[in-house]
Amino acid sequence: MKFIKEEDEKRRDYILQKDEKTKSVSTFVIVVLVLLIIGVVASGIYFTYQ
Image: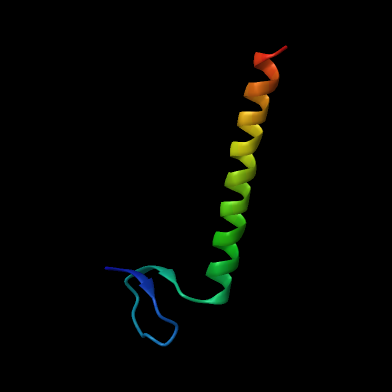
């Protein structure tokens, strides 16, 4: 099984495909995870000093 499939490959056993949709969705997921981590840290700091 291959992890990343190139756009021009003809195969069905892959996890991610190297195309524009995969890049945009992975960027969105990373941004959301970073925002969630920042929110957890900020709320921890806020409630510690309350």
